[in-house]
Image (cartoon, rainbow, N blue to C red; front, top):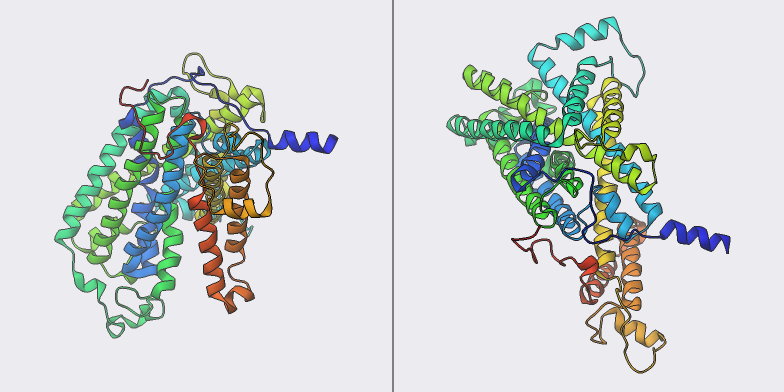
Length: 519
């Protein structure tokens, strides 16, 4: 009996009440949320990541890498958008898993989000510090390596106190108030998009399509070993996919919008729309910027740390170089603010539910922000930025992001097929026979509403699909790929035919069911 009680406690779900009041200030509109999503994402990927991936991983095909990463992010974005329409609460994936999967999974995902946002903030601060330092001929890095070297393999080569200072400045800004910080974010995002337009216009003037068709024989001898096979895809399809894995990091950040469920004026309408609009703007910017960058200068000559200032200096446009440099700094500021913004909200949500310390949910009456959670978040992120290098931070963040996206997608599937009320098929409830289960797997019974059986079938097929995905590289599947495709196809077919219901009184699609007069 005790084991059953523990099991029930671990899988109990949170119940939400309609019109539940919030202590946070509802001051964010559609423009604020979209600017937050764009600003938190459109920074490091444009001004640092594109050049690094083009130089060593994908070449000019970095544009295709961004496209692949955008498609994957779009699916994740749709899941977040649907949940935001169903569950307009602060906490993002933590709250989503709490209302659908259970408390234990929510607790695990909550800690995963904490680590993800801490590492994300630290990585952006580290990237910004490296970017500014590279413009100063790496003066800070050289001095700190001489004065305070760190000879530990898994840490940075020196303590980066400049990155520490950047994180603490953003922490103070967020502690002042969400309205004030979003105003500054809107300004920096507008300057960032203006910089992107300047880069596209000036870059298009200096573009040379021949840089996408470089023959191996025309590559200088000193670069030939690391330049691949030349052409548009010098590193082949493997390079494109490896680049997509790295470019995916450039799309991480839109989910911060999902943490504003208790600060948005119309969360059920504005949060899903802002996520979709943000991803569209981000993809167009990334794809265009990567195209211009690789057409302006050969991929193997790119500067991995500050590609655009270097390229514009090489083509003889020093004025544009400094315009881009200043705009990139503004972009990294918005990216840093967006990376830091969700973390106090997750701590606030977990503290409110009692799965973390209650003081973390305390709201300052003057600023209407979780002040203690914000300060602790800033300190932890600043310490991470000080002692770790950028590559290690990116790798750690990617793991946390993948887990969060997976849980959100799984939670959407569970909620769609969860039974809300008992449905009578006759005068008496019918027991589930193997024949009935087999027919219901493909919904041959014609039931229009979810039942307990359909809910269980949905959960089982999710598990089967996950197992097939994890084992796709085993010897059996390698010997019989047709069997793997047929098995996955049957799982998808059964999921598609199962009856779905509008769980939590929300729309079943993130772009449907909006009321323009919603309050």
